[in-house]
Image (cartoon, rainbow, N blue to C red):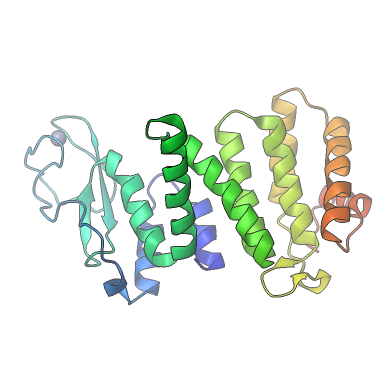
Amino acid sequence: MSFLDFIFRLFKSDNNEHDAATRSNSDATQTSYRGPEIGSLDFSKCVYCQAPLIKAPEKRTKCKKCGDYIYVRKRPSDNKRVLLKESELNILEDQWLSVNDPEAYAEKQKVIERLSRENGTTPSKAETDWEWYKSLLNLYAQNGHWGLYRNTRLNMATFLSENKNPGEAALTYLEVYYLDLNGSNNANGFDKSMAMGLPWMYEEAVKISEESGITKENLKERFLERARLLKDKLSLPVDPNTAWSKMEKGKDK
Ligand SMILES: [Zn+2]
């Protein structure tokens, strides 16, 4: 998956039609997908209750009869727009993942197999995603793909925030900002000339920390502690204190 595909995944909104369209249009090789077809090509009926739809949905639409949400996405099997149930969105996301990033998809399948074996039951999406991110970090670190590594840490920050772990989420956002100031990339690891920090990460970290009673001073301490470890482990060029003052000022490099 390209850097942009990752970004689109990170910032996808409730109606991520743009996301689906961007990915499928950018990749004309739809024939590479060999999995099952998903969704309905019949835009005149609700996918849940089969009630007739007055207008063909163009984006997320609530069925007037049953009240459930109908989603519109492109599917990779034939690149056609289809109607989907909410429960099918994750399946479709995995289908696109298998096309756009076969390496990450294969990691995910391995994680699901392992968790299923260990738990004796199918793992939840949250459990799968978390373990998947961890195995991707390993993979990218081994291969020196520090741009993808950084993207995965950002996915983890979002995950932590959504799963009610604000302290760790805040720290992870700062860690990503720090990696960005160090110019993490897939070509040569860390290169200050490629620094590209995103100031919103600092603002988000401070916001969610304060909401959960962590002071800025305390956040700073925790960040410095973690950043020093990272700097040692990965031989990062930027000093943690320097990074903190850049982040406070909202600098991008
Ligand atoms: Zn319906």
